[in-house]
Length: 405
Image (cartoon, rainbow, N blue to C red; front, side):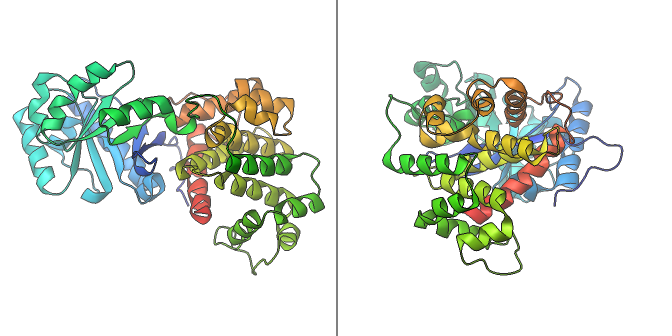
């Protein structure tokens, strides 16, 4: 379990942001800390970096933050010079340094780190000539593509290409940006494109997506009874088998093996089975990136945890809102069209479509925190902090996702 912060200390504000390859497979997570910045005082930078690393790896732990993937993290230059690399194995971290001219002391440290097996990334590269010495020492170069045209980017990438650097596009906000950057020769991609539909041109939901959408619609019906749920799930062999495999996984740790949908409903209750059958149906959408399902699970759990009420109906509604906040990207269809096939209340519809109402505002706060914007507080007074909810939801979603995969 994620460790609680020591008494009297605030929760560590840290989020992880996926870095993906051209097949949308996650290759690492960048860790973004609340309040992280580089000051003009080297001593302050080193102390701040030390404090962040102690909080992140001491109070939380690397496994909970990045799992089996390398953690990409920005490191103050004077921290590397004065202290050295963070206490991580070289294969577990990518060290990012700012794209500014470097003194000989830093260049020497980077050479030593490279020989020790550490991967160094030059962050926010803009093509400036005075960082040329760093290009020879950084095997990864990150470029913010937001607001930059193809010609400008092509010129900026000439230097890193000479040195054989792996190119990472950041600020990739939409699937169209992803396609553009892939065509320019970028290998890795970072941004919000994961959770948005491609929508290259208007088209209906594909056959496989239509099947999943029908199942989601039936499962989401507010008046679905015990018998209705049994019929809906059992009529889809793939869904029922996947659900039974899931409820028999270590995630539930049931005292005995469940052999039928009816037994699952009896043992776990209709609310729990409906929830997980819905997750199974979403994960069965053809070509759905695993990370997108992980984002859905994390948002759902975080929204639920931030509910200002203990009423199970309210918590379930917020879970549903978080879960379906990526439905347009999963179905590659505008959210408005997706919702036409789902029997949701007007409250859920406006929260998903326009982020309006208390629940829509809470979803907005959750998504902002996910992006590393660290809003001060959600619109309601939650039982836990945003940082605490993020951390606990991350652990829960990762565990749930491993059982789904």
